[in-house]
Amino acid sequence: MRLFGKYLLILFKSQMQYRTSFWLLSFGQFFIPFSVFAGLYFMFERFGQIRGWDFYEVALVFSVIHMAFALSECFARGFDMFSSLVINGEFDRLLVRPRNTVLQVLGSKFEFTRIGRLLQSVLVLAWAVSQIHMDWTFAKIVTLILMIMSGVFIFTGIFILMATMCFWTIQGLEISSIFTDGGREMAQYPLNIYQKWVTRFFTYVIPFGCVNYLPLMYILDRTEGSPVLYMLSPLAGCVFIIPCLLLWRFGVRHYRSTGS
Image (cartoon, rainbow, N blue to C red; front, side, top):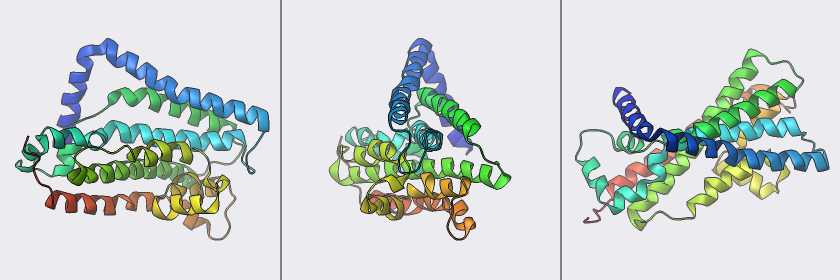
């Protein structure tokens, strides 16, 4: 953690050397999801609700997913940009250093400009929470925090999986956008509004349902059966990163230098 903190400090100082660019990029990151949220607002103004979900309930899901994506993009950007390390032969240098490759790749790139997207998500979350009429118990607050943490682990796991593919493909593949950007866009709504096969895939394979649907049912007191299972469902998202790390280790063992 000490080395990781040094990586953070060094890259933060380097990005702050161009403060105007930093703040303009942060400002842009604030308005990118804001435009999506505006479309969400106008859709509910027109139709009122979607499959029994009102605007503020969906806004809560929206904020959690975008907050998790912003944090993951900030701290796991090294895996998202991993193909450049392979192409330039920089990953060969990481292999000869006496540190874990996961830590080194994480520390190779941070996107602090995602603070704009994070701030917008926090504002939406605060607005949604203030408008949902319910009793916020300690258990529900913990569940909400777990939802955000689980989302961070899932997006980070997807970044790791896509980076692992670079050991065989060299170049990063655009198919990864289906599960990162596409997953974010899909998971910003409760999953039960989609067809069953979509809901099952994004619950049992990529567990976004354990972030934006099952725990939300617990928070809104709509559970069927044991509420504890709904409350603890975000832990499945945290577990998702384990097989991703195992596949990463498999890819590292089978990596062949690009010869750059």
